[in-house]
Length: 268
Image (cartoon, rainbow, N blue to C red; front, side):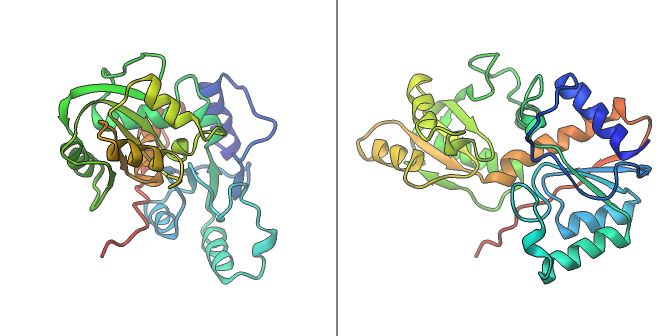
């Protein structure tokens, strides 16, 4: 199969073939006509992920986030940049195609990033509203215990908490990736917390003067509100893990492997 055939099959299965006119889902490396020997799925095509793909003989990386450091993967500004040149050489020398599956992945019949998240945590049957991936009802616990559960399940060394770790919780909101920034409306995460009567919001990226400040003030006022900051990569990587399984029926027997891009941080 060629790269473009894989892309077309992915878009057909996820979105019924619907294609956005303006999208960041671009082929950042390689050619649509390349024959695919194997597929790697990952949160982002880091240098280590590329090296792993080369080692296992895969030549198509399906990444959720950009390859070249901006949302649109524009490279005009990078032509003399040593990091870009070295990364591009690694891809070109080894014949690796990189396709971003982001916008269409989130607009799929069921958001595939959230599908991977709930599978990883075992929360598929805990949605407060079956039509929404944003709110869950779990067994009563505390914020600190929930944070510990997330650390273990997501393989993390540290998480951040806003609010009191001893606070009880059972109604949990989840906004993966950049969702807690509001998806175009800064008010959205606070409204979601209020309308769903959520005890805790689990977040990817944060802005410290919006939801973070709201939860912090609520906790200072004695309200049962908290926030657990997991990070963009750790909330969305699991969708790419699920994608490897999701791809198998449409990949004509090609090997498909998930490679964890891992958190980029070192904790001291």
